[in-house]
Length: 184
Image (cartoon, rainbow, N blue to C red):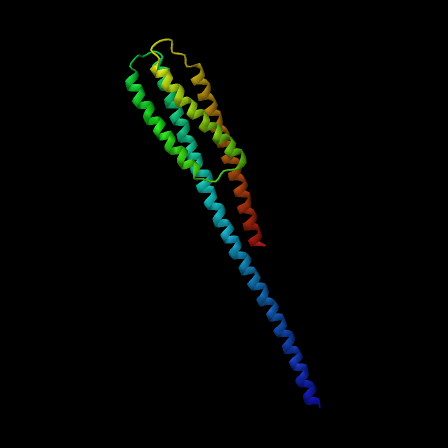
């Protein structure tokens, strides 16, 4: 009888140890699944920082440069009558701007970013139309409307750049939160 009692007591102890080990193993399994999700989220966050923020900021910089170069061309057109040389330069800048806009459109947009980007594209369309009119008119060149669209496009690019910084900060904060969660 005493042997049976010892045997039952040992089985009870072994069952308790097995139960504790099962809980520890489940905890490790849950932690591994959470870590895998955190690593995936962190990878997505870093990818988004590069593809949707840093690369876009590069596009914005290039677009700003093309706008500036076009503005210089039009300022020179006002004093120089050699419009054919300027026309080929403008066509190159317009082609480059179109390519950058297409690259930009492949990225993820926030709601505000969509609004400013559509406004920017609209300004570019109007500018291209006004450029053609400006270069075709032989006398009385007035580029006030064109200047206005240059300013609008530049403002849209500044707003888009501000969004990149704000969204980059959000992604950075998310990454810090993920790392902090993993540390805990």
